[in-house]
Figure 1: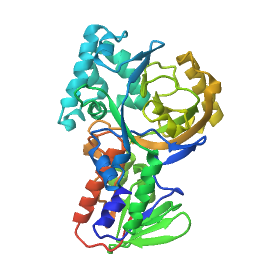
Figure 2: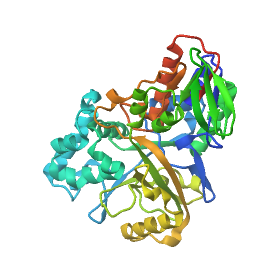
Figure 3: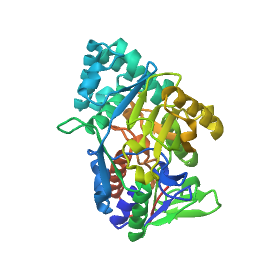
Length: 432
């Protein structure tokens, strides 16, 4: 959407195709009981310059509410707070020397500028070296497995660097307190305004249009897009924004090297439960989990950040679980997932009662997070393909950050500049 808007603002005729019947992708909203809020959890950081600039452009900057939040850890069967320096120093699972090394690791990572050097080091080796074996086994390894599964073995240290750098930015205040923000109404409000901005620039948005094949005329800068509904449309330039393996599948004219480069990118998917509850679990926005028996990655208590009035006086909780796209957990029934997740909450929170859950909604997406493997940026195919007029720009091209809305907007704006710099003067462009 950002890419389409920026190209239209520069005088291009843009058509945006969306496979679903609504815009938003991973940032879309959904009904959770009587509440409409984000399908997956999102926050705004003070350092999210590109996102905040876009919200300013949409006239939404005055609708951002900011709040200091707390963080928790569930480890050794206990729920512990780690929201300030004193709580960090008191953190029972680690000895003082372990805590000092952990703190030094986080501080050092926040100051690193040459992220490409970290691409050559495995995240496990790097964390063991800086934090020590005890802290790695007790804290880092469970967190890596929760986020990456067994892919942590192939991930580079650039992954943890990008994660630390983003979250450290939320504490860049004099008091070093964690500050997050949200737009009143959530992403439903942002997407409403985004649609208006696209309409104002006459971007042709076509919903429920899933591309099945993209090919070009030999010797001509015309790209044909065949859709699964049986229609075909032709453009001067086409930008594909879907996951890399899907892009390789629908673009058969790519070279063998391009296809191999796209197909080697590994993704993680997510199964995320959203719970609407009559009362809160705790007062932590995020609770990190180091216990292997817990079936979800973390507890995100959105109502610890967002005013309860947006949820009808209720609490909104997200329980994410990151998985490989081919994991059979994606096939499990919602009722089965609900029972497993609720049973885990009963063990974690003594005050939790399953009758407090008024709505339990499960969302699934198989391709969410590209895994930054060793030497990732060197193996990534270029944005411009060997097919004249065809470009691939997706989340796999986020090289020095983690997948979030701010990085996505930044990528789109950079790509728009590169597309317009390509020789030729296209009259019609599309984004898929």
